[in-house]
Image 1 (tube, rainbow, N blue to C red):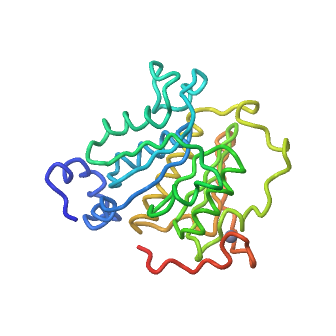
Image 2 (cartoon, protein in one colour; image 1 turned 45 degrees about the vertical axis):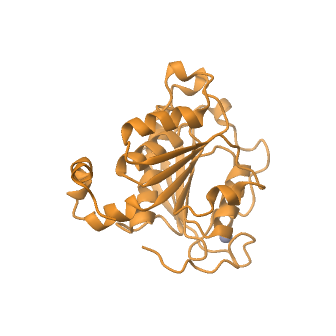
Length: 257
Ligand SMILES: [Zn+2]
């Protein structure tokens, strides 16, 4: 899949990187990504994937835009209030890069539809804010052998990990059980600052680009923890859990970039 003149100009600054290449750009153009959740993490994640030139990007969110979203979800504008987030995001993303096929899915990811949503994608970026959904997305990606980038943010902290099912620790290997209900405050109660979510969502997009092109080492078997209050970043090692119900029996993908 070759690049035309417009694409070479559009992507010229990333093509100038010594780590990047025309081959990486072409690989991106023939790739597809799914971004689940179009809020504080999904806004920057989807923006950077579309801007960078991923060929197809599916954007998944069942909810409407609310006034309280606008302080940290820059894909949605004030006139979008009460519109669906999937359509609202898809409209902006198509303006950013009309070369990308952006498919809006106004759906809630649940056990009975998760595998169908992630099937055939080259990477999934999970930008939801619920532990329950994270396990559902993780299990579906493991079953379908789709690489996954997990992320979360709360207050001034966040974390990101990348997963190659069958090769590296999955979310369930790293966190075998969800924290007891009520032990982790919701974003609604604990608060979140937009730029902190912007940092985490941007790192998720970067990880997805690594997984799609192989241009740099992704955060597999490691969890990046960031604390923007204390300006600290910590890498916590993790490894595959023997007998993990999600990934223990998943064979490694036939080929990776
Ligand atoms: Zn696992």
